[in-house]
Image (cartoon, rainbow, N blue to C red; front, side, top):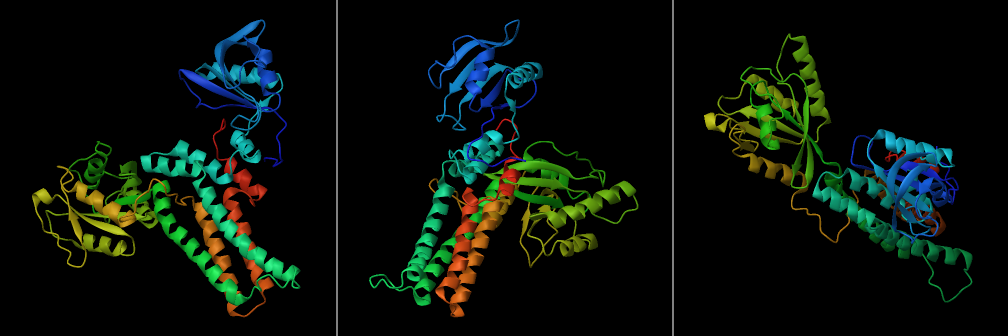
Length: 455
């Protein structure tokens, strides 16, 4: 567990690049003694006097044993990622070289960093707030351009600015109540009543509700959607998966029941990451292996954000098709009529069906457009707009809105303004958890433990 203290005294070391065979590795050292410890093992210029943020060539190791030739970058405090003395050692790739360098650094006074401890120190030392720290991992994990842009907005502090704006408005209301309570004898101050508080709180609640409404777009961009391809055997589910991906991901044959387990893939749909799941054809069967696959398919339907229910347009609807329509009735779904090149026999008067030929890639663009419309509509990620997208942030906004609702309820019940103030202070404390201003230590442990070791 991390100890949350104003400054971390110990010097830590970690590998910032992924383990494995590579051309280069970067080893990061941070702490009061970072430059001194590296200097003991660096054979080249004296790192304590080289220009800040410069790169110095030399060799690394003890006097009787050189480990590697390296390039060393020195970042004196506070001009570093952690706002501590920091050194980055660029060495050759591979497991042995980096592990030996780290072993020597530990031998000479450093300790192995915990996962996320470099970013934790950047947060504790005031270089970034908690929302910016989370955005760093979002940048690293981005798989679409929209995900990257969303993460960069958080990293540059756009979320923090919105949080600060809400905090400022809350503090102004709270301060006006406090002045009335503490200095009732002042004649030149506005007497705060529930009649004055009510529109101010309602305005703030409307702003929170707007942010929550926008956040649904942000969450879809950040997390993507889970789409399951469902249908009876041999309707072309695997062909549809391959056509959407533009590659032969799933095996396709004329044999009914070829797919017996879930096949998963990621589809970048104009900035939305769609987690596609191809399932076993659903039917009554005595085959034990196929039955397991069908059970998994039904669970995938239950967990999905979207169901692509596929029919064979070369034949009329069957009882099994009707059962699948009933099974997916409560899910957000798109009906797909496949094999349109062989016929057009499926017609559902009450629900739109998108006809495609997965084999010939006909109608795939229309299907993609319908998925995009269903989840984002006309929403766009504006260059200057920041969206709350992190589930933790959204949950906090919902709590803040609930606290404001409680404050309005107190006003409707004609409770004194100091009772209304309790709910407003709660809202202020809750919104501060987004940036970490009021975040508990347990939350910090949980968030930073999910970071990469050298980050």
